[in-house]
Length: 322
Ligand SMILES: C[S@@+](CC[C@H](N)C(=O)[O-])C[C@H]1O[C@@H](n2cnc3c(N)ncnc32)[C@H](O)[C@@H]1O
Image (cartoon, rainbow, N blue to C red):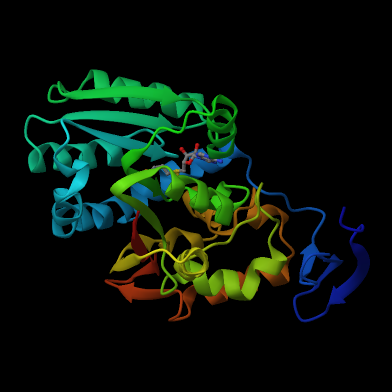
């Protein structure tokens, strides 16, 4: 077992706050614990994510990838079999899944698509089922939901001893809350059939998130699992696994102008999503608040367009071969 972390206290006069400093036992990195601040719960995160989608081009960016690259990526799937087996990990409410399934249907007319979904949030599973019920064009597609986390699914598969193989597995914007990312990637890669592909969509190192997390992660409360991961973190894991992969970069932006309007409730929620903190503006020390708002305006994080401030939300689409 790791020894208990050493606790020190320190004042940060330039930012005008006092914090406990924990030294993480595994890598000696420092984390500042500011007692008033806490992470978003999974439900609060899901709520904040919805509002983020409304103000960002995240899904338009994925649409662009679907149009430009997905037809080629899915062209060889299934290797001539009558059924293509697909697994979505952390699929949320299913919009992205259905778009990709339709691209597979177009590339493989008449082939059956067996689609399994791992999604722990019951509201998301219910919304996904509703979306399927309302879709008129999914006759050749079967759906099976596992209301589990990726780790619970892995444990279930290992207990059963039956290891189903898939032709296409995707993990889209979901690795941030997975407990052991290298293990999850290794496990789901092992679930690929011959000629199968694993698609990971994650924030790019060219995004504003990457520079924000590099500078300020030690001041923010850790998320449930505390993973501030971007594309390079994933490709490091893939290199260690010795697997082949290709990275596609697509630009995306998030209009965060409201974050700079004093007392604006939408801006307050945006700051919560940006920092992973519940009521960041109400609970963070004033110095940290000011520093973060200044950082958000820097060119590494955002650009100005038509008087609006657009935070860079660039995405990396990583396609891993079996
Ligand atoms: C940001 S949403 C992305 C949803 C969808 N893939 C998309 O791009 O629209 C992340 C999803 O991962 C799910 N999730 C969170 N932790 C998970 C875990 N440990 N295993 C599997 N899914 C998880 C959440 O419930 C949520 O639906």
